Image (cartoon, rainbow, N blue to C red; front, side):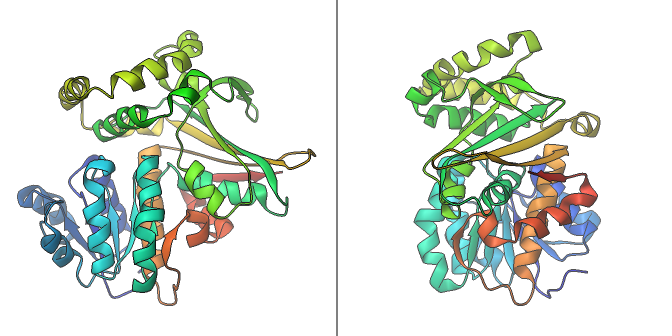
Length: 360
């Protein structure tokens, strides 16, 4: 049983990821409060576990604060976070709850750290954004790759994802992220290939607006962070991987049109909520971080690997929230994952779920 008497709140508990988070909290024997807009849907998710339900709309500050009252931590799963996330963070701080979320939206991570973080510090509240598959493993790997290396010229964070199928929420957030991307980086990517560990080897890559570009400089002395992802991740066929990177810029520019984004949202509404368990089990992912020292010298690497990006996201956010809820946790403010938790210990806790770490 978790070492806390106070429940963990889950906001956005009726979405695909929110349901997985609720199931993981139940598996861990934790008490939970489920929140979101729709009371009936919340009750259906809560019923098998006996969890409490406290409905609250994202634009109702008083209801949000009441929903989080008495909780040890909040796990936010409702997105797109750039649209609905800020009130949830503010309510968590007001209620005195630590906060983690499942966002993959880098601009929102930046807001949590730099905009909300200063208010969280005097409240004794820790805020950690981007705590799921994207981008906790990569941030922890950044800390381990840079360990003892001194000042760095560059950190390269390279994602490889095989067999990935996105949820509706991920698809929406991805298009929103592309629309916020820097056109220069999309048109002139800093890297076109990356040498992954065997058996992947050398792969074409595309720019990836990963959260580590925000979080890693909080704890690593580096002049630059470059993030990429295997082009095949988003290609319908391996032979089409080389053309994925050139397409990201026009897609990102198109999504800046409110009309086109509205059309995309309506199309996304017709997609399945998320992949079935069989498809999730088929996914294999790895994050390789290469730390390149100032003045040259041999780079150092850390690689984290696993499967089922949505399943591991539920595990990581629950693990993070329960660690914050434990007596003696004294960190506060807007933090990177590697500042909020000890990297090796946290990754070791993920080992029973198929996550491995390789350094050197």
